[in-house]
Every structure is written in C-alpha cells, then in structure tokens.
Length: 211
Image (cartoon, rainbow, N blue to C red; front, side):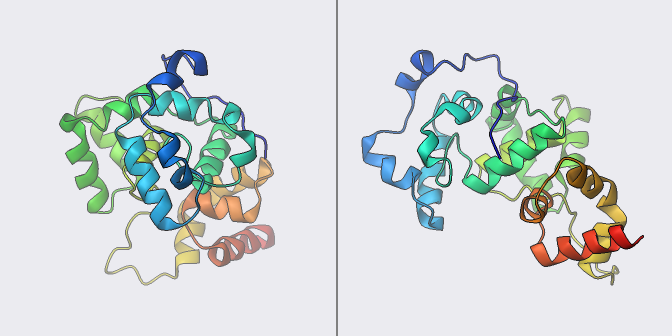
C-alpha cells in the first residue's frame, strides 16, 4: 500500500521549514525505528511533546521511506499509519491542527473521559462538536493514538448484550466493511481499521459474501 498524504494541516509540510524544530534527536532514533511496545511508548512520549508532530505525520510518505515498515512517525506506529492511509482512501481526512488542539488542557481531559467510558471516536466527535470544537471521527482517532489510547471503532459491549463480537460487527459495521472491500483493503488492514481481531473480521466477510 503506497502512502498518499491527504491529511489536512495549515502548517507547511516541507521538511526544510519544520524538521529543525523537531524534538527527536539522534539519541532517540533507535526508539523511533524500534517495533517493541516499550520502544514505541518511548517514541510516542517524545512525539507528544514535539511542536511539529502534525507536520511530521502529514509528511510521513517522504520521511525515511526505508523505515516505513515499522517504527513511529508523527506519533503513530506502522499499524496506525496503515489505518490512517486506509481512512484517507475512504475519504476520511483528519484535520491535524484540530487533533493537536484536542491535546490542549481544555480538551484533553474531556477526550480521555469520553474514551474511558467506552465512547467510540464517532460518538466522541459528536459530543465535542456539541461542546464547541468541531471535529470528525478520524480526527478524534488521531488524537487518541497520539496519547497512546485505542482508536477502535466498536463501542464497549453493554452488559445485557450477549451477541458474539462477529454478530455485533456485522450488525453495526457491515456498510463500513463493504466499503473497505470495495477499496481493496486486505483482511488484516480491515481488521486493524475497525480495531478487531482478524478472525472476527474474516467471519463477518464470509457472512456478507454469503448473504
């Protein structure tokens, strides 16, 4: 899958204009290209304090192409970057300036609280928009990823809901999966996009094809 930069940001993406202000240094490079959970956590912590994190993410397809298979770029790991690319192919373009605003003290606690009670990125976007900051679901996902939180699309299972997960996905996200299939998304990438296991995704695909 070839990365195409579609993310929205008013900041220039020219490395000559912003890379000199980045927080990462040669001393931290090993973490940024490491794939262990510990290395990614350390790299993300550096990204979280970086003033040009959004520009780095917007320019991800031009940054060290040889490292695109793993590591952290712009605060996202390789899986998250693939999900973001797939979201962009589906027409979901995050506003990175607005995602950055979600990490300010005014909004970060609210973002964390809504996620902690099981709200989906879509529901969080609706609530925050109603409270004065207009955002969409994919922008919320990026902000959540930057903080190390999950950006999965499924809501928390209600205590009275006894449906197996594949049934919940089928009944709640079949349109999304059909769009993913239409855009040629692989099953692993489709599963990562939703934030579910590959076995669950495969079962739903089978059900949809059999319908």
